[in-house]
Length: 289
Image 1 (spheres, one colour):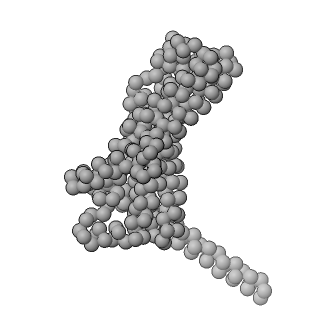
Image 2 (image 1 turned 120 degrees about the vertical axis):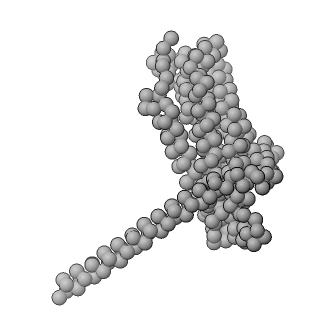
Image 3 (image 1 turned 90 degrees about the vertical axis):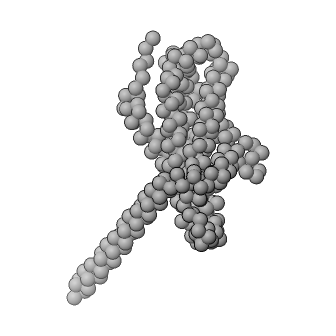
C-alpha cells in the first residue's frame, strides 16, 4: 500500500509539473504573438505618424540625436557612440598590429582596420550604444506614461497612441542612426590610424595604401543599411516594452532591463544575419595584389 501511495503522489507531481510547463509555454507563445501584433501595427502606421505627427517626429529626431537636458551638453547619442567606436577602433589597431606582427605582416594593419571596423566593430558598437541610450530612454518615457495613465488619456482624447508614441520614435531612431553611424565609422577609422601610426610607429603611407586598397565602398553602403535595420529593430523592441509596462516605477525599471537585454541580442543577430546574407560564409573579398 505504501508503494502505491508513493506512486500516486509521484504521478500527481508529474501532472502538476506538466500543467505548469504547458501554462508557461502558452504564456510565452502569447507574449510572442502580442509582440508580433504590436510590431506589425507600429510599422504599418508609420505613414500615419509622418502625415499627422510630423512635428512630434522632428522633435524626437532632435532629442534622439542631440539629447535633452544634461545629455545635450555633450552632444547626445552622436558623441556617445562616437566615443564608443573610437575605443573600439583603437582596440582593433592595437590587437591587429600585435597579432599580425607575430607572423611578420604588420603592414597589413590597414587592411585589418578597413575589414573589421566596417563589417563588425562599428556596427555592433553603434548598435549597443543605440540600445543603451536611445532605446532605454524610449522605454523609460513610454513606461512612465503608461503607469501614469497618460497613454490612456491620449486614447480618450482621440489620439492614436501607437503611431503618436511608437511609430514616431521608430522613424526618429531610423533617421538619427544615419548621422550617429557616420560619426561612429569615422571615429573608428581615425582611432585605428592614430594608434597604428603614432603608437606603433608604422609609416602612414603603408597604412593608407592597404587601408584604401581594401576598403570597399559597397561594404560601407551595406554597413549603413545594417545600421538602419538595427535602428528599426532596437526601437521596435524598446517601444513595445515601454508601451506595455506595468507595475509602477519598479515595473518600468524591469521593462527597461528586459528591453535592453532583448535589443542587445537582436543587434548581434542582425549583424550575423546581414553578414551571412551579404558576404556569405567566405567573407566575399579577394586578398591579392
